[in-house]
Length: 118
Length: 118
DNA sequence: TCCTTAGTTCAAAAGTTATTGAACAATTGG
DNA sequence: CCAATTGTTCAATAACTTTTGAACTAAGGA
Image 1 (cartoon, rainbow over the protein chains, first blue to last red):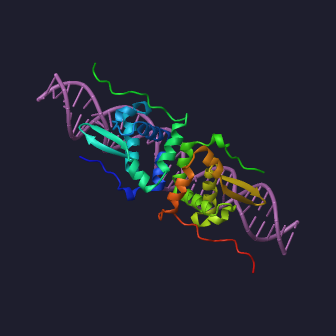
Image 2: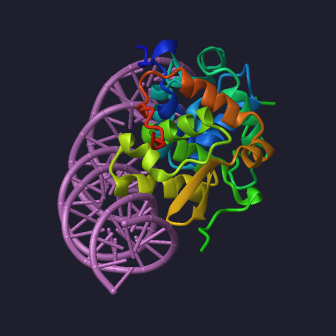
Image 3: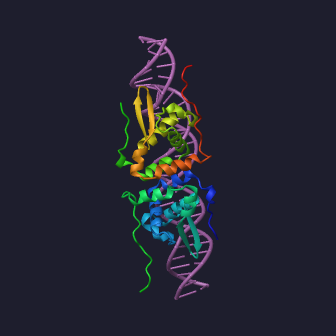
């Protein structure tokens, strides 16, 4: 089972900007950027909204081509499509993330790391 | 009579991105960027919509801090707030404009330059 | 002064997006 | 198999955005 993603050349500038024009989604992207290389599951973002609501926002990000969601068991591992976005819109993601990092108005994702049993 | 504009430090990242996430407004910004230095009045954009609708979109851009509108007689002279945006969100406007320039899906502003009487 | 040009405002309608809860599916572990 | 975990889907609602036309204001020119 794989989820639908646009190809790189199908990623649309106004759609990406519109999707990023929401504080919850910008907070998701900022957090993904801060954990680059690590695949996060949806539960990581529960600080930002209900499970249902996150499913909605994460679907928007995925359908816009901003994130990739890989199905691993019952989890969806979420990553930023950084290389694809850089290829399509050079510099855009970097400047958005740099600005988002400095934005105190964005909601924060608490550092709820997965606990390894001791 | 002056119109309300946010100060540079009041410009919000999600609001700017949201405002740019609309093909009509992105086309306005792209056209303003292509005529940088020139102040354009609203009628320049009539290819993109009705007078009323443009008034709405131009107000959104102005209220978000993307453009500046100066009242000159019965005209509003519109410019991009490039320096302010560069200061607040370095690189963002450049990358958005570069991507918009290459976007064939955006509506075009016909080159309706003001005719000087012969 | 009267007419035109430029643009705004208002209210209504249409369309879109966000949020919610309940029900569902799929995988994993016991 | 059973229960728990992870996340989706659906339908309803609430909230916002876009578009429209008619009425309006303000400045400028004849």
